[in-house]
View 1: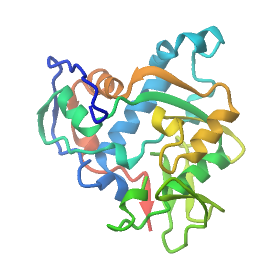
View 2: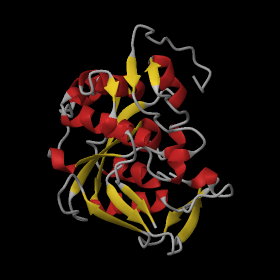
View 3: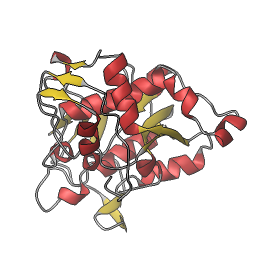
Length: 252
């Protein structure tokens, strides 16, 4: 993988994509893509279906943390654009294609955060939009809008390319799973261990995880979860539902 670790891939796995799933050339840093929709659908399915319950580690289970602690309509999935790195061509494909998309050993994580924190997390993820070659390193699913006519309110530096948000001005959330967005509600955000630990612009994830002891990194490998979704929910056929981005993110 991208960290130099030797990994084993199950070469018996096979699915068919009737459309090209777009992830190469920083596409997911620039806006919504069909591959981003598929990826986050898989993560949210993993949580909502209850499949995630068997993936909490031993210490979490001993502490009674062995399921998602909010209703399904308060479960969302977020994935950063830098961790979708290749297209999946219109063709038959296997596990190697998923490893090309995500060449990191990411695990599924759950971060509990307030609606206000969720807004700030999206605000921070928007700081490099509109996408240019100069902002490529700083760009980062849920129905929301980013208004790039408004400047990002940058405070102190966070890492090499990112800044914490002084206010939420660019991002507005239309709805969460068809329900009105509530800044005071608690949402379970399904993501990766890298975001859980505050990678790139994800400082809000790290803060929220530290504030809520139910937040956890599971033992489930993200690539395996995506494959399980394709197999069990899509019957190994990715078709018209993912022919194009589904209108979850609007960049004005």
